Image (tube, rainbow, N blue to C red; front, side):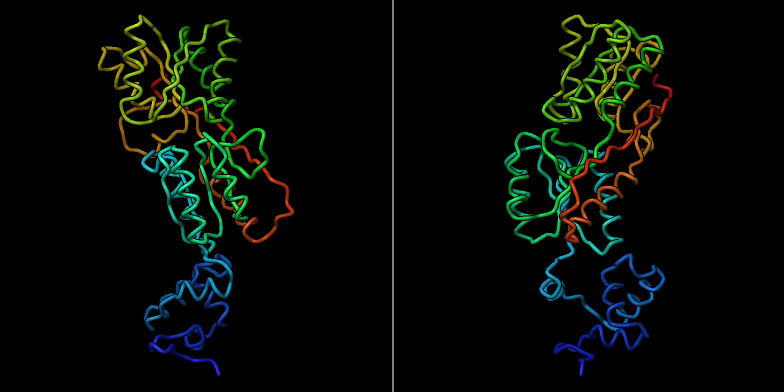
Amino acid sequence: MARLKTKDGLPTLKSIAERTGYTANTVSQALRNSASVAQETRDQIRKVALEMGYVHNVVASSLRSGRTHTVALIFGDVSNMLFAIKIRELEEELRRHGYQVLILNTDEDEALERRAVRTAISRQVDGVVLCPCQKGREALDLMDQHHVPYVLSGRAFPDLERDSVVWADYKGALIATRHLIDRGCGRILFLNGPEIISSARERGRGYRDALREAGLTPVERSVPSSMAGSVRRALDELSAGGLRFDGVFAFSDLMALEAACWLQEHGLRIPEDVRMAGFDDILSHMCIPFGLTSISADKKAETRHTAELLLRRIEGRQEIPFECRVMDVELIARTSS
């Protein structure tokens, strides 16, 4: 006969099932917050379980199922607003499917990325979402060797077939640069990210192709770090060298915002003197009085695609070919341009 209480006097799934009138399996799914159980039913079961003093035994559950229902989210800079938004959306989406998350930061460092992956493996996570620093592939090799399902987020290796979700970086840069040209800019500075990452390379291609179409000369500067002050230093150096420009296209909204501060400090008006565009549209998530034109994509859809690709691997559907899903982008024109 199934026990109604543990040795510690705590209720079991059986006792919660008898109290609520649901099956033990439904109770188990509800307590793991599985989307297979209606939200109303989940709330009801969890309320009763809490009243009865139920404590979920993660270790015992993982031993029975062979899973920990944990996913590691490994990103280069969790203080970066775009990454913070992605992590928050992923956590919420994965929770709907009964998973908790382990968040690991790499500082865009290859050694820290390997350490983060080792930590995830040692914690026996069921899967990983990784935004790779792209300074090497050792982290991917580790996950492959240990048969850990994973999805690459935001960046991909063109010559390596792996599940990934990226933005249409080339298209975004192309339409942003064309927009600035259409607005009358003839000397557009592109503040790009480190060219080692795939998104920076694709955005650089789009920027250069748009200028080539218009018969204009590229003026591109790679900013090696997203740390505060990096854009200011780059603009100080360019200005000291005599560079003049009437448009700025930035790899990210954060870079664009720092460039806007520098321009205003140097007496240049936006958009009267310099028109601007960013990329990723994170400022739409922030309450600041600055209307930055930016490239945007559906971030919630991006999250759903990422979770879907990962969960199908976790569920053992290894025969499905690897897939790179590209999120379409659009220009959101605001007062900066």
